[in-house]
Length: 192
Ligand code: AMP
Image (cartoon, rainbow, N blue to C red; front, side, top):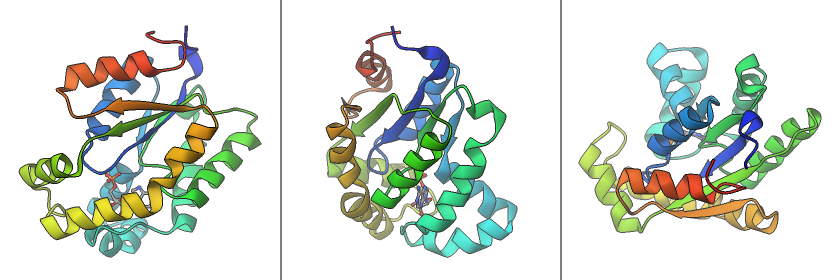
């Protein structure tokens, strides 16, 4: 049995792999907070907060916000009481330095990650999903840029977590219920 009382999980995957939806579902099942850095940043932009003003242009061109700024955002979020007993991080870490920052945050509390779920799908599926959805920043050039950035900056994390024995690969190119079951089956200790 997985220790569902203190699940610390990271979701990895290219944009539009279905990661956001699955992260929310899994977090609900495991009763841990889903923490989406993308959602946090979009909310900051909507609110017109100082953070929002700093990240809006970067986000709109499909690029990544700086590791330094993200470290601050994530450190503050994980310090909140609801994240004490576990969390599901969706969209962080996204670079090797961010992975090191997360390691440092967890080490300072003497806790560890349990699972890193990699949700994957072929590039054309990702692009088709993004354009179908038509979010403001999801025009094709930006979509392709986000995918390119994923392969350049984020894909190296797959190997890092695989070497640590934390990686759970899940095929995201299926309907949602099937993907959800596959994710649960992939977690340490099998189905919960
Ligand atoms: P997402 O919804 O996770 O695809 O995030 C939307 C956008 O927010 C990304 O394209 C980035 O510009 C920014 N973002 C979210 N998480 C991070 C992160 N961990 N590092 C840098 N930028 C991020």
